[in-house]
Length: 352
Image (tube, rainbow, N blue to C red):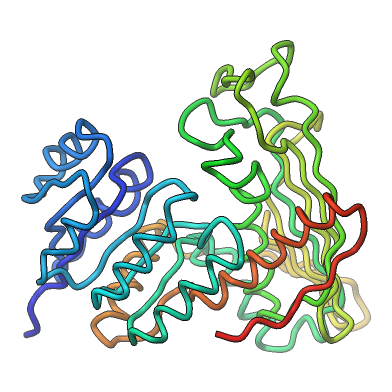
């Protein structure tokens, strides 16, 4: 039997401790051998909690452990690029948390580095493994939707500005809800649609709430409004090849009665929505709604990590490839660029 896959984790904070390390350790074929964080107390706490033998504050030292096979990059968005490129160059497979980088330029560099190194590059869009998404994907692939012509990707929080971490910093996070939670719902839509190529984007972002002290907070408490530098609402309209269009709606704060996290796809034979999972069509002269009687159980982060490890062992492909995540970042870049230019922007075809 092949030896265990040995993993190092760069960035040992929230997402590493909640999703990456524990799910690696659930797999008999994996050993987490090193953790790293620029904050020594965070790295030490993670190592002690999960009984990891090697602890570093410099990821370059972690990469000097030559028997590491793979690396999870769980740093803030602004620090995805350098350790990912270095890990690939050192011959490691990489799982980088979403988004792939601060922009498509960084994502393209990572994809090219993975290709050059002949190593796997996976991206942490764990919603790819949501049971509703996977179930409805089978409807689409079976032709039940017909030709999709319109999609709507929505992830709208009423009061959901994180009161921790780097989420409110443009410098560290790259943006607000669009690049944080929006990338997940955009990816889910693209996955269901079969990854059509986006050709142009029109978008608008707003900062109307996050930099104010008089906004009523939600369950996460008040954020640091004095240092809030990202948008709190972002909206876009995307044109794809093949006469397909999509709207994008994201918010950290919005005056809505009910939060919404949903993908809708309309086709000439039927339509789907992910929340709740529904297929809308017609049969025998009757308009019908089909809802699954059962959706498979299983946590999406757990399945994401398991699929990455299986791919390393030659048992399939990664759940979310760098090239797929790159399309997401092109759309995100386009919305931000369109807002800045106050016009629709064209997207170039990127070649890895």
